[in-house]
Length: 212
Image 1 (cartoon, one colour):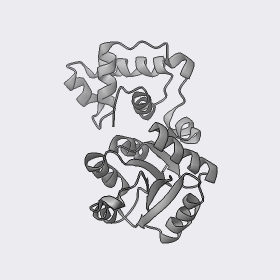
Image 2 (image 1 turned 90 degrees about the horizontal axis):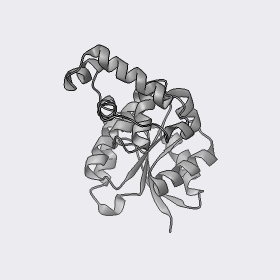
Image 3 (image 1 turned 60 degrees about the horizontal axis):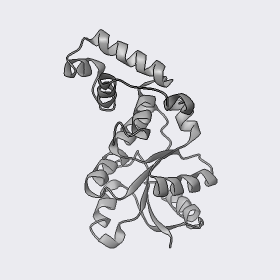
Image 4 (image 1 turned 180 degrees about the vertical axis):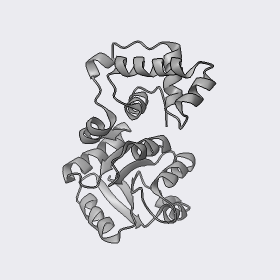
């Protein structure tokens, strides 16, 4: 039995090319193609059209990938979303992760990586390429991760940091001064060997501190 995949991509030629690639993978088959999120949600009204995985572009007319992923998380949480985009800035990646995407690939990725990503997302529930993780999210040190002990307030800070709140808003919510919050941030970054807030979100998701 093959896992079913739907591609949401507004560029028809690229969408068709991706469909050809995915149909060539032994564990996957394409159900259909959509040009935007609204079209996808309309098709989902028929249960037969709900796939295992949605390969989701981000910049699309009518309803973009972030908006669509949020809707899928709320209405069809059993469907795994794998983002596929040319966007490689950390703000976009953060938004897709918060929206509920299980993985993030750049469109210039190799065929073998795409296949592996589909398998990992479906069978383990999470996938990110080394390029995206190392280049944009800050590398993590697995050996040291397991030895890190986070205090309750640090855990609370991490959960707040995984939202859209500014550090000033987090300080207010935690009844602390902005300077204290900056101290928490710097201390946690050092403990976890992170370079930025995006890396912290990835760490939180991987370690089930924050569930998107």
